[in-house]
Length: 145
Image (tube, rainbow, N blue to C red; front, top):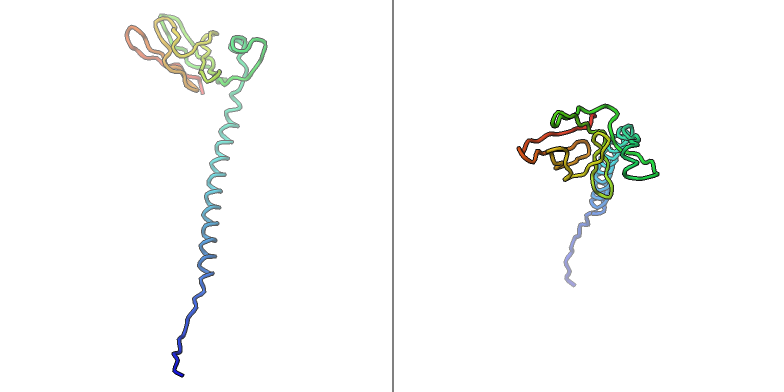
């Protein structure tokens, strides 16, 4: 009988797959740590903004008759804007049913409303943008953060 002697070499591949799984776990852990760090930053930012929650009775009576709900405003006074020799101060901003509303001098306004010759073109979380309908001049009212 003639036969060939064949030599087989088996290479252990289990180490390679375990190493890849180990690396994947480390990478996922790093992503988790980064996500937790970002989340903690957002939580701290939210906690800092909680200090701005106060009650604005004038706005609350208009929005929610008989209720008293928190509204985001600043505890510092904002710089008033002069329109036709009259001062207008932004006192607070609130969102109601997806619409931003602004408390200016004890009156509640929304985008598109007029103050003298100025139309409220945009209300953001901390400011109101006014545009003169005759001249196009822009004015901005900001909360005093």
